[in-house]
Image 1 (cartoon, rainbow, N blue to C red):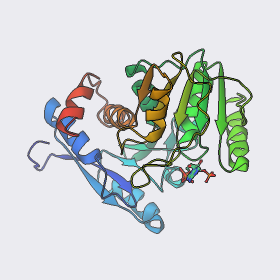
Image 2 (image 1 turned 180 degrees about the vertical axis):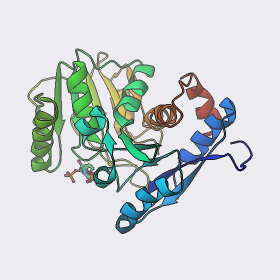
Image 3 (image 1 turned 90 degrees about the vertical axis):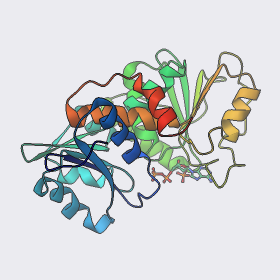
Length: 280
Ligand code: ATR
């Protein structure tokens, strides 16, 4: 981040809670490297204040905000325009202010896909198994169906939520996803649940690893711990690649920064963010 002055453009993250976010450090680091006069902070917004807060960023002449839990769906009703992707995913994580109007986008699925590609994992033409049917699973189910996964299967503790997700995907993009394990094997297995996250690091969202071999890859949206029991077991069973959730966190931020500023960012900044922001 550069020194804040009278011309500094404001950005932030609206969520509740937001204290543990890395977004300010990531965005301010990119601004520093690109020598752009933006300042990004965490904005703690209770659900009952979301309407005032999001309208407030227009009044305060913000350049934009990221939006995180629990606001990603609720925020949509207050926006003037919503991108085709965000509409399809049913949630918004990036809002840009342009001439007093609010434009909504969602960079989560693109961020996750970029992180998979970076980890050597392709989705196109693959049988994909997704663990969990919550808000995190929705964008990737739609995106993977659209870009040409051979099949997308979602399994979830609560079967009705998996069925609801399949209906959502059908209505959103006309594609069919499966909600039970119909295949004997999968090319890519992705954990979107919170199972295995700190502090419950011993838990695992999958109990059958018998289909895993050296043609299987795994990804987890969790980044704390950096290697969940799920990823560890996938590796032990021969998976050729494993990717944790840090890449998604970084890439969704890079793509959001591009939306805020209208400027293309060299995605090789990924490694610099990893080192300078996360110390890895
Ligand atoms: P969101 O708010 O994003 O929708 P969520 O409701 O916390 O997220 O759900 C996250 C996912 O993790 C869900 O698929 C949830 O399964 P249920 O639909 O059955 O609740 C899954 N999940 C969370 N804790 C779990 C656990 N202990 N075992 C299995 N799945 C779990």
